[in-house]
Length: 74
Image (cartoon, rainbow, N blue to C red):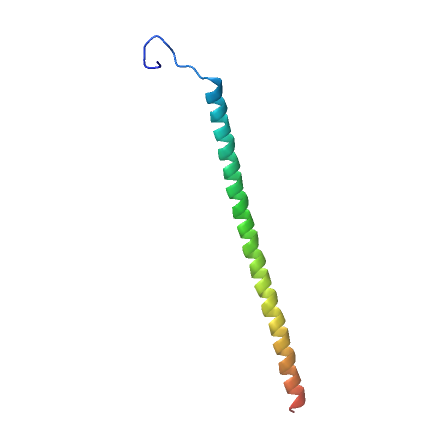
């Protein structure tokens, strides 16, 4: 009917509601993706800190073991 001349196209309420719902869903999806990216970045930083802590503890243990060898052998 929209193809016939003389009748202007019109928007119906269900169609507008569906379009609004699609826009809201798209905004929510974009926000969710952005939040997941932020969480991934935080997890990477946490992982780096964890490995730094593990290497630090291992270095302290090795330093203490090396120091005990130095005190035993003159």
